[in-house]
Image (tube, rainbow, N blue to C red; front, side, top):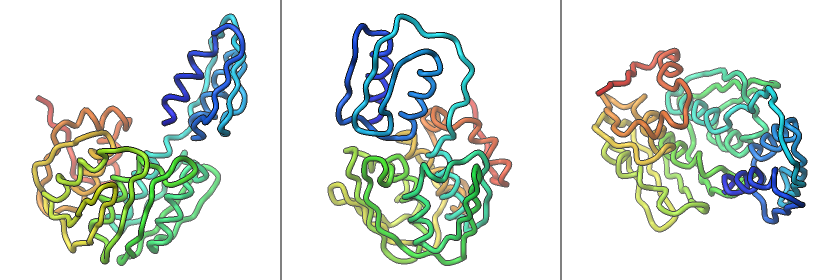
Length: 256
């Protein structure tokens, strides 16, 4: 889990002496954190590998820094385009951070054009089922698992998804089933049989990515979908509702 690696790095920056982290997470967010901290005066090296060394310093300085694009948000919008069988251009995106996601979308039949800071996706009317196994970076990200499953619910054929990182990450599945999805769970494996149509329902976001998966399903479901516990979703996506509205989705946040 890269959060543990990040916390270890942050704790070590002002600690006396040298701290070595073995078996460190390798996600691009770790590299971004290293670059940020080093700009502040920290002495961190090795981010992106499994071995990171931090030499403690006495203090850090104020800096201005541009954070890297959110790779999971990028993947979420690519899947939104795919489930709607539509085309989309995503700006301020780094395709190198989500290579496994792009590879799977292309395997399904999507056409993707990658520029330096931009990804264009063109989605055909018919997509192919695919199999997925989540793995530590640079493998298929566990945070994209539920979002991909949601998108696969309307793809003809049978897709098999294996979750190798976290336990209990299929809690959102029962909510998709309420919407007409055909998904069965056996241990860490989800078998998704594509259906022609999903239907609006009252559902609950069980976590951040599971909640996003319900939004994606609701975007194509017949009728109205009402999602409770949206604080999970809002925690992980900035201006999510506004961005979806700008794409033409009939979506609103109900307060109270």
